Image 1: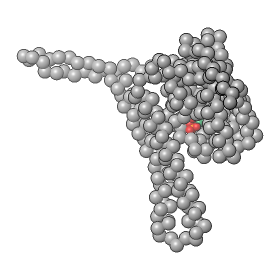
Image 2 (image 1 turned 90 degrees about the horizontal axis):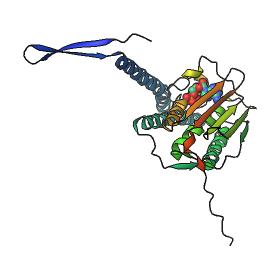
Image 3 (image 1 turned 180 degrees about the vertical axis):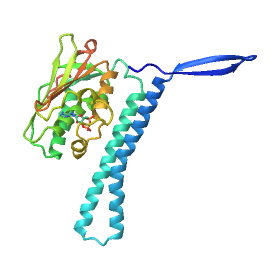
Image 4 (image 1 turned 120 degrees about the horizontal axis):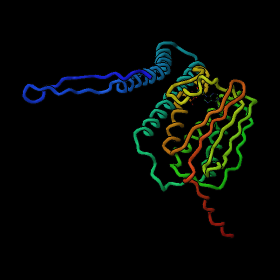
Length: 273
Ligand code: ADP
């Protein structure tokens, strides 16, 4: 990497003596550059829908419009509002994940319940986007993973949502849990979508990194989904694995660690009435 840059300062210290202070400023400068990039990205993401919104407001205020046009403009304005809402929600999720300690031990979540909810959200999204995929969810194993339910669900749902959004109509999505040899568990989402070229793969979890900006936007993407997934998985001591190639589809998988698995407790059988 780059050689470290060192800042040296001489501070007056006692009777005519000087204290030599030195520190590596490379890391500080890098952090500062990342912060600037982030602020620039957020501003850009917000500016676009805001420009559309203010434009339409002006049009509605100044032009005599037919009712049909008014309705259409208001619909478009609603879309831009929703877009900003999603962006702000994702930003808040990220900042919560970064600023809070990892979830404490002791919270266990049955993967069956997570998967059911994830499936419901995935099917709803496919319907909203009018996608006619084959969307297959295999039955989840009867185990629990350690972790906060809402966080784990948001990571899983982000992967399913990406598969639904990026896979063209007529494609197939397959969602499946697998128990690993070391006792861990893997949640994998496989799709027959466009795939991702190798040079992009390491960067997909960066905030606002998108292979195709307009494709992401069209389908309601914020560019923050995989950054959220990465944070959640890291906090749980797990790993995000990506296998993808252009034209060959993608598999995004979350591996959760071994020692945290235990069989799910079956609910007591319902008493007959
Ligand atoms: P976005 O909101 O843009 O989807 P993400 O962080 O979820 O943001 O994903 C980052 C980028 O990774 C996407 O813009 C897209 O280019 C790529 N990507 C993510 N999932 C898939 C997928 N299943 N198939 C193809 N490309 C994907």
